[in-house]
Length: 320
Length: 303
Image (cartoon, rainbow over all chains, first blue to last red; front, side):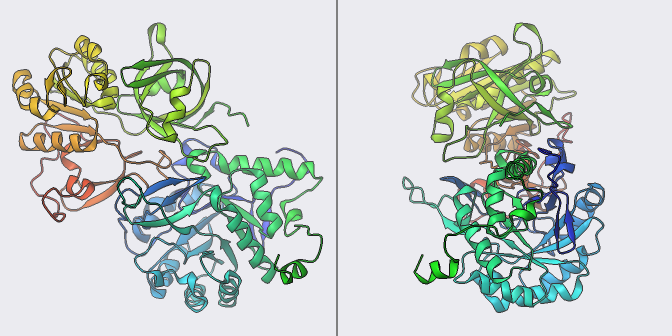
């Protein structure tokens, strides 16, 4: 650790993580692949790639397109199904020694509920993340997080069968993300994961074809960081007591600090893992150094501490 | 931020000094000081090279290992070949000796060597031929006969033909414009080479349509064939699921999207579902064909 006085551990209303820097869903597997390269026990936590009830083969290639300071992906939730997941990753999750959040996805409220019921008792799993905001689904109405009522239905159904806390992962592709967040918390969400990728499109102007096989895809990477920080800020102001895991384009300790200042309780690193497998560890290190340089002791000291000259309500009223 | 040499169980991330930057015709080659990766790297495997900070593209670029030297004057070095085509690779053509690169490797499944069969035909398209020289040396060291076909658009895109002549018993070169060797493609000379060399095993690396044609020829002629495929990669280490290749299961009942980075890039040619992956030539995607010869005699296919 950068400084003996800094303690990186965080407590998300009862869920403890050794550092506030987690591996984000879909960018970290379940940690097994990266563990061949990095000291996995120095990761704050692992949010697994989303799992559905039945195996999903995913979308045709090309599944990825690089865009300025980011990338578009359209994987289509490829996964071995919840039984395959439990069999293949269950023993690993049990012994990895790092808190694991299992991300679940589904095409119906009932599917979410059945997957949740299957994973909630897994040893080593501290929470469920409900991926209700994946943009790479057949129909837009399957993005439950676009509608407060649909989002609440999913969260409520999961909460009824789960003995462990539920985080709802939301999309910023909505008019009012705080409204969706409120609906989820009212339905029983313990916390919120902000944000999923934004729906994007890239077109090859030589061939006139979309860069992705699925035409549209989810935009991630540093390009979306300001959008993510804004979403965290809006939700944290609306729900100051609800734990938020902030994510979107984080690749350094300073990036992570920005999310904490906006109101996040912890963060997750996604796309950066693809080009820097050590990103989660280095972000935590960098955050520790930043805290030490500010004379702070804990990541919680930064939470929601953004400073403005005037109260933000007055700035907002002026159209700022 | 300094990148120390970080070692896990298998995959190594190393900050490597560039020993030399060379040109082979239209291609660039970089030789790195990378003793640990060179020690374990095998033909068909690749490395992921990090791009420098401060650019608007982020992802590493994958390059198959052209040469991993464990002995002699070049011991501990690793060479890969590239062509500048877009912002992600153009910067690498400007890299010079003593520059440092952030390299992860060796990655992916290598080519498998035949246990009993002897006559190996190595087919390379463009700079896809890069890993085949390393493979040829390994096969020769195991007492195998190596023959080669090198194909390209034009003369300066035929990769290291002189080296090919040194390593192969028989070699055939094709260019689309006839500027070197026979005018045409590798497919035009493949049947004649197979019968002339009594080919028992085929290895191919190059553009996917070429791999498909070679694999389909080999299925038709009952020749075991391994191909090193190209598919766009995000991470190269198995977590992003970008590089999916539809591969038919060993029992022929069904298929899976496998990751070129960790399940490949070397696949058994007969098991890649080419129609699904690259599109059908004649119409809609067909169901997986039955009766594929999956475990060809003499070749381990436990990869």
